[in-house]
Image 1 (tube, helix red, strand yellow):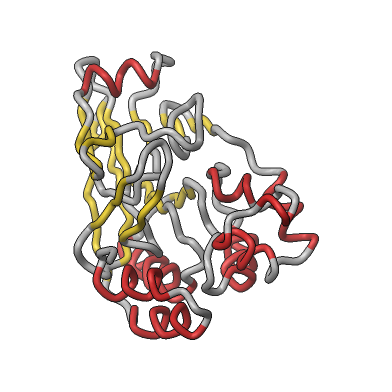
Image 2 (spheres, rainbow, N blue to C red; image 1 turned 135 degrees about the horizontal axis):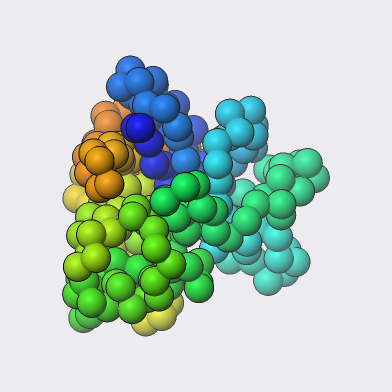
Length: 243
């Protein structure tokens, strides 16, 4: 079985279309979506339409949840997406689960307990650094999965735990860098504008991962972000870095 894992699209329709074309070329059996699909100044409504049509197994991310908050409590990036969305699209977000289990595969956005906590990283000196495998195992809390797929940090990474479980973050389809103040001020940067996803292949009882970087016309999305007054997004989309 071959699974393609996508995450953190953030309304970047062009990147999503490039990734789905690459997945189709590779002949994957299943595509799973790890959340944070629409938030930002890009093409939230069109991205929602495409994902709703495809019906991928999907978990809700923290920004998907925040898009359901009252508008006066939203962060600017969430508010810009919310203004594009229909009632049917918001209802679709509201119906998504925080966790999914498909045989021996667990899908979550952050950790199984929190959609806004990193599973594979710690915040240190304003940046993300890899967590120790023992700490990753503690955050997972058991459960018997042989493959855990997570998102949230936008950082492609794989960790093999002592019990053989493979934990994979495919990286971000649509936003290769960001800055945030929670849980403390820090940045995440991939250093390139590529769209990211992962291909998972079962070999006997174990899983193996390939982290994939896809080229697409990132300049168009960067121009759109700049035209909507989001220079920080424009730089992140063009360079994979934050100012």
